[in-house]
Image 1 (cartoon, rainbow, N blue to C red):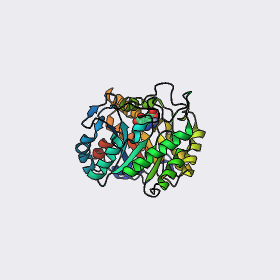
Image 2 (image 1 turned 90 degrees about the vertical axis):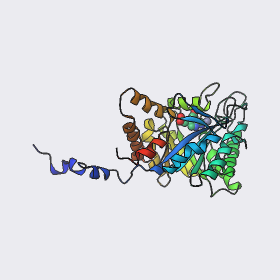
Image 3 (image 1 turned 135 degrees about the vertical axis):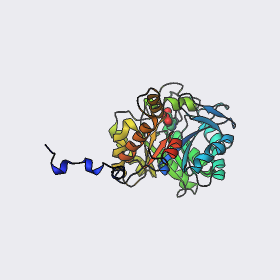
Length: 333
Ligand code: PBG
Ligand code: ZN
């Protein structure tokens, strides 16, 4: 028995060319990928990270040689994370915007050496505080929100003054988007620097490899009082709307795979903003682990996950697979 005429779908994707038309006009492109880089304070470091295959902690002196081939292949943007390991940390994260620290030095170097490369900087305090939390604390260990957002705004403005094109607060303090935007305006940089807000950032089990990489695990407690509960669809929606209203230029959802529904909601809540998502360290490690165990082929699964993000509405993907995608997007699968 043949199906009704309008039930025939195969005819629309029986050929590679027709398959390429079934993407709602949203192909993966190289410029969709932003590459996260860990910059440490040992200028000559190139330390492999055990839990993140192929990723390293880089010293400033190694960046040009590492990135030149990637830029030549079409790398268009990076996001920098500072990893100070030599200098003692303090309660307010003084090292975050140390003028001789790894992030500020890397911004200046990359601006000079790769004039076309777009430089984003993660803005948070957890890599720089002695307690490992993302803000400034009260004596009882809870977040002291007002000084936290003042300090985050100061750090963001200092990255922007050093030449960052984009500042991206990942701390999840209340009101930090507005505080940073106001800080940029006051510094005369209001229209010159992009503010990408980690808006719907969930308290996830998938950040483990990153916290090892940047040495930012909290020394006590956890981040559940500021990162969103995984069940909290309503809070995610409110945070997205809030950050749009506080002046964010780009909205982000993080992690990606367990939160594709939120990504899709963000597309509807902020239809006129670029939408970013962060395929985090644990997702990257998980895809590698599955491939190593023979569950699937690495490239196929990396591409399938990236497609899911674009399908859900992402226009920008922060991913540790970025170097691979610069090759894969040149070679038909
Ligand atoms: C810290 C920060 C985290 C990530 C980016 N910025 C981790 C955390 O909140 O503990 C996660 C990135 C990743 O896992 O790849 N503010
Ligand atoms: Zn943090």
